[in-house]
Length: 472
Image (cartoon, rainbow, N blue to C red; front, side, top):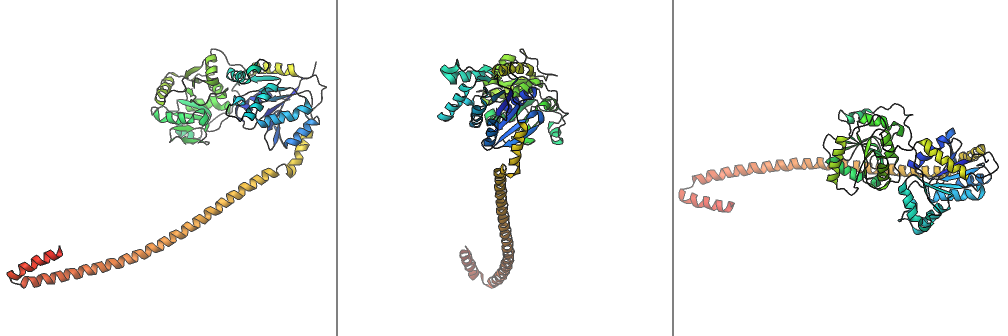
């Protein structure tokens, strides 16, 4: 019987749900490691030791080729993007490790991709020893994309386990959040990072249509509001980043009764849905993608047509909030969510089936640490230092330009003040001259009137008539 294999999880940059899934796996498998890959560098993570080791890609692959990863070994790829493919292909010749692939989304078959990139991703899918996906939505996409090869390269559905919220420290709202919450609270919670692809525009259009007493809190952030505060002209409060374990407390603090999912792009899994249920919130979600699949399977909410117009959506939201009640614990679902233990039992079986019958060999974890130290001496961070220097120089140039603009503005203000002072003096002189002309005119008119008064009527009347015509 072969020894248990160490699994190296190859993860693309970006974090999010993929990173959360992988760290959930390695909590049950403390001997595994994670390789975070990008074009410029790899970061080798030992989660059990909370150790992160930055390396140049070529150096890591050379060290792995010399046996540094030990054996038996499995590779578990968590994506199909070029950096993940490059890392797996670089490891394969020297480690001969079987590869598991989890498809966390449907971008492996995105029709908008260039033809050669889409073909490369599908080839990578076909070449995996085992293919997994958390939802039927992704499985169906894979079957459609693989066509006639789908039977030879099936994708197994392996739902992600629901984490228990047991490790969260006490949460207190900031003074600003406490003031925003007030006595009314926020009946509607939108959970996660909300961008254009997740229906941000629709959410911003909904907020002003709601009754004054019904407000929205984003437990997370939006692409237009990363920090805590108001957005959408003061109609939506953004809480900011939080630990998922804190969500049940935040839901209670803000007084939320319903988790709302705006009509964005179809979700592939959506941890936010699981988190809402585990926090005691039923959901109102668009009827497409994995959201619809999971709500139909488990219950716990209601679906709506994602093409619904804004006014009809507003009425539906108001009605759903009116009937919604926050549960004291997780929402009781018609079909319970899979637990982490259930997910890991299935995944352990996959790993066990693929484990190669190799001679056990310990990994050289200290060797990779020594390799990293060479780069920490300066070489590895040279590009990063150059980039930081470039940013500093750009900021310095911007600062100098602003200083020059401010100095020029101050000169203009001084010139304007001097011109205003000169204008005031000239205006006073002109006013003095006008006053003198007016006085002279009044004096002359008075003298003429006295002279005319002495004339006989026969001469005075024609003369007055003539003066009036001349004045007109």
